[in-house]
Length: 492
Image (cartoon, rainbow, N blue to C red):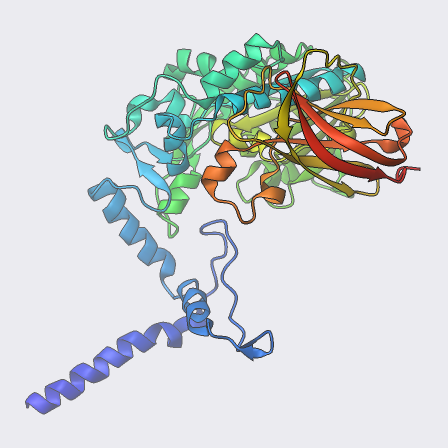
């Protein structure tokens, strides 16, 4: 009897553990549960040799395709989130059913504070962009959108302590100080948060919050616009939040959305081309699937007040799309954090929208923009030591970037590249940005945080640069010795 029991037990055990493999052909892969690509089946041979990591790769591949995976994740996350109230699947379970993205917590507690030099670099970067746009006849505004936790902090778990200041508040003060055009959405949303402006189970604002943000942005831009202040709406329990999807991929709880009854002007898509159902296409771009929404252009059939808009945006910009389209003859939307400023049409308005939790990305990589020439008086500048200078020909410009010594005072945050060949001397203002992707492949996070950098695209054709030039970097009242760079007039 005991032997029979062991046989039956063993048979059931192997049946259970083999069941997922047996059922796999009958189940579809749910690729969008976590907004990431599923692990690919590993190769048996890698680089001409037996793949030593095959078992690890197979494990990842199998885990992504186990039948009932969504149901198992949902059940596990329900216990962790609703019963144990612990962060899971990058989601913080707050009070009264409120959910928050875990990546908001560093901003909330100010554990990711930028250095003073980084705050200054942030302001200078935006000031250079605004200068370029305005010099070509356009208007500019920077629109940082606060995290949900920054507006509804009282719904965060008590174990998270809110800081009195953080990167957003410090950046706002810096932009005020140096007169960069921006909007303070944080104060506005906090003052009106009783009107229910963010979703409980989504990381974004709802359409009511977005409409309020739209009006604040357009006011900050100084552009005439429709306010939609008398628009009627219905509050419907029809919204499935992104955080709820992360917790319960098999199906969770709906959230309230404010659906406005607004008759927008007719428009067409210039990009993508041949769109027959513009409403359906816009609905796709406003959804969280993020399908081919990196770059698209609309053309309004009736609007007259505003010409062209170039809007750099992230996921918070999705809810703003219909309002922007309805107020510009032509609107270009680019989802990126490293904009190409040369792509902004002459005379166009530029809106640079980004959510608070991604603010650091503004100075992670320099925008593409030709560095402006400057007349810099270096009288009284002291020697500051050595700078690491790297140059590369990009086909349309010469890119010069590098690093400055750690711990230096960059003064007003502005960095200048001085080029001289013994006969002529030129000065360009660089973005005060440390090119992390290019410079820190082998450096740790601490080195990244302490580093001071610069980055510039030099239009050698326009400046008539040719031959070898000595490079010096000027910042904070000091001059740092670099190397040499060769110009071949690559733009000609």
